[in-house]
Length: 319
Ligand code: CNA
Image (tube, rainbow, N blue to C red; front, side, top):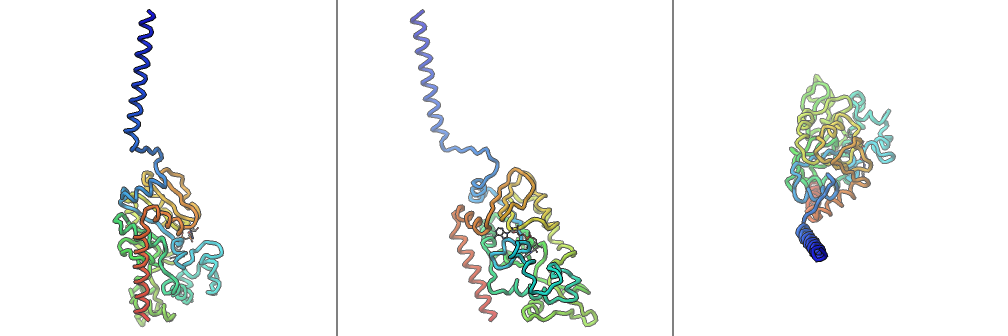
């Protein structure tokens, strides 16, 4: 009995040793595997761009991405456009984008337009170059912006990738007879600060760039491209307070499975959702960190140099 008992214990011990050894070997085998039980986080975001797991990245952007480009946003206290419009002698800040006021006094809009389009110190920001970098990687779905400055194009993005929900300065029309007018002439008038009037002598309406004023409808292109939002596999929201409708509604139409990254001073996406990452604080700093973590500082700087050289050659051609 004693002998059988000792033999059984010996065999049990032997089996346990073998099992431990087996486990250790298996652990060594599994060393190169990694498990993440979080659905989405910064590391997944960076790796997903690096490996081109995301192939249709959509940007939703606002005035915040152009602040470091030299254009104030609307609402930042102290530095925002609305708090800086005193020098324009407006009855109230929003009047600058109201058709009724423009009919009576188009001058403030002309002054603002000149500053926006021809200001010497205005150039694309870190965010604009980042967007171009994503485009160059071949993984950009599109950019939908509330901005009217068109700095994405100056950073080198092709126009078909950009939807400007609140209009742009690439075309213009008469606010009375709605006839399309010459945009080059519009630009000359903005530069010289002379008012462009309708070329139809009987009309004499005022010509306005196709910027959407308050109570005007949004461009058809916006509604068409809004349907495309659902095709994105990653959404990056930058520099917007997401309060202006219908643009703010775009964020709500993104499916729960699609990850959203908000890069903004404050979290402007109020909805609670999985697959969500908020990068708070300064926009330029956050974007620069992303570029660095992607190991793409060199490509980024090349894009920046190309755009800045192009701009300076444009300026020297005009002068
Ligand atoms: P907004 O309401 O002014 O919000 C801007 C957002 O950007 C805010 O949430 C800020 O906290 C954030 N922000 C600003 N600077 C930084 C920074 N350095 N780092 C991080 N976050 C920052 O602007 P929205 O675009 O949301 O509002 C829509 C308006 C603004 C649209 O009608 C635009 O046409 C209009 N707008 C456009 C321009 C332009 O074309 N550049 C300029 C001013 C206003």
